[in-house]
Length: 275
Image (tube, rainbow, N blue to C red; front, side, top):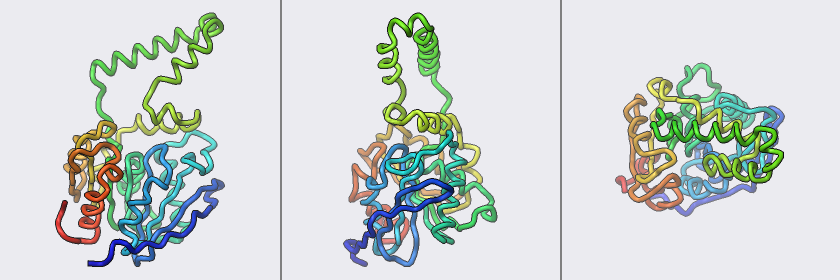
């Protein structure tokens, strides 16, 4: 077996693509290229272990998308499609003609949208995809969730009624800052709008259009993107295979690094058996 300890990391670099300055780095000197598309609000450093797992066989590119970590923020609220179009320009700037895409959570939304296109509409070939705890399926809200949304909207309207806000403005701001998911609360005002566009888009209709070989790796206890999302993706994508990591959550590649490495290399390099 090829040594798994081979790893050459180039220092973080900067590139301007379509007017946005972003940071990226490359790990490994393998003959093939893999690009990691990050989850919402994360830094590319979170995926260093993923890059190291493949560094002997791939050149792995990690990047901070616009609005993520230290990269420039979009000047207007971007949709998933906007992020895809920017990423396509990035691939052209990097002169990448074919690559394996590895995505986590939000990054999988981008992969779904690009892989569902007619291949002739992409300037590069997606060779394979690895989707880790991927986002993209929007479930119909339960009655309890619908009630919470109604209650929030009602409270928000009352809280921003001018006399109320004048009297209790600080308390109103604190209350509103505590609403929404942790990712949403941690985002800037612009990125909150981008996130809202993403989470309100159901990509289920795109899944049957995907012909690219797709590997799905899912944490058994993921609550952000539940396991049933992975099961539905396996069923709907034309050529997909799902592996479930027992006892892991939404960051399965961090929580169970050794098992993740074994299954990733099994999928992409055909090494050994599944963990």
